[in-house]
Image (tube, rainbow, N blue to C red; front, side, top):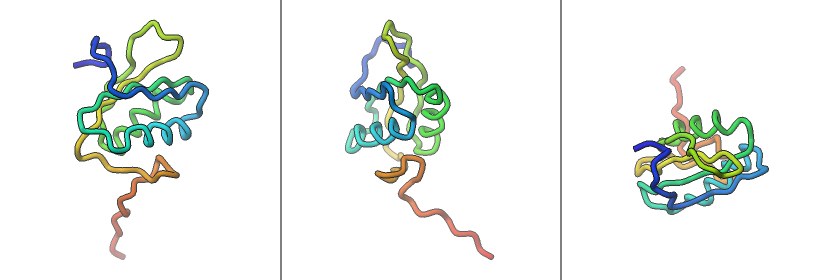
Length: 105
């Protein structure tokens, strides 16, 4: 399945006019409690979104599906939620809630 499939989104996050950090905070809140397999469309105008969204998905374990071809005024990107995703902090979407592993000295 590709992001361009006719299948619609289960959740749409409108990040129009938001910088990526704020967009990711909104995305995190929108998907909180959503079931694995949920398809999410993110509307994003920040030029960093095509880099930041796949990186965030890689960090958390969600599946980044890519840009969604559409007639919409603003770019739309798709992702699918996974069951084993790592949660991020509510105030810092680039930091997972899992403690960092400690290195031995």
